[in-house]
Length: 67
Image (cartoon, rainbow, N blue to C red; front, side, top):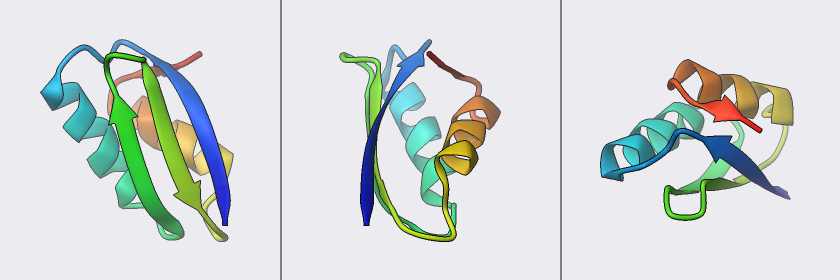
């Protein structure tokens, strides 16, 4: 298992949190995802076949920017 904390721009509310968690959580290999709008961070625990690129793309697809 790998753990990554990703800085994300644009999250500001509970809906933002839910959108990011749902998008990233759908990836095969992601076992835990916790978005924090207050900190503008997403903590992800994952294993193969998920990758940091897949996770960042899922965040982007949810409408937010990885910084």
